[in-house]
Image 1 (cartoon, one colour):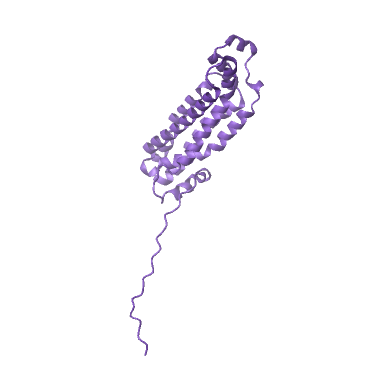
Image 2: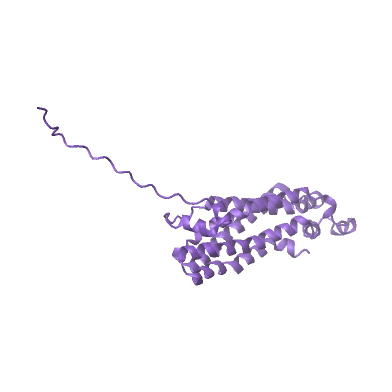
Length: 239
């Protein structure tokens, strides 16, 4: 007669449930509410979408530097002064800094409006996925702008003489009337407005409170637009 096996049976290890995957930032553009539903069960991580913010900021600086590049090059060629390359890099870094500052502003004011459940850092961070293709378009249009579209009159340049700043102002006045300048202004202002508009349904889904969601979308709007206006002021005031 066979003896029953007295060895204790080994318990099978239970599978540890994996954490839900966070949505891609591009999903925010196609469906903010669906994005928020997928984001809700994940752990809050303020820097989750910082990469797309940094990319957008870098391309913003490149777009601005590409737009004003002819004025810097012309001034350096006619009146001398600082190295054009150094000025181009400074313009790009300045534009990128203001874009990052805009994100921080939107994050803090969005958090103030929508509260902690709104997860403003992640919502607004993902919203920056809207901007990189637009900044690339601005850069391409700026680089393809013909010289005749912005070149100051010969008499005005002769009057400016060797004054580097005067030559730059004349060139900027011409560049401010180009399609690239109009496109950059539209992307900066309308893009910011679109970010805030898209954030409302995401905040509403995350907070469940329409009033807080509206505050999270509206509080950053005017300050962010003001930063964009300041960034483009050298062009706008030359019109």
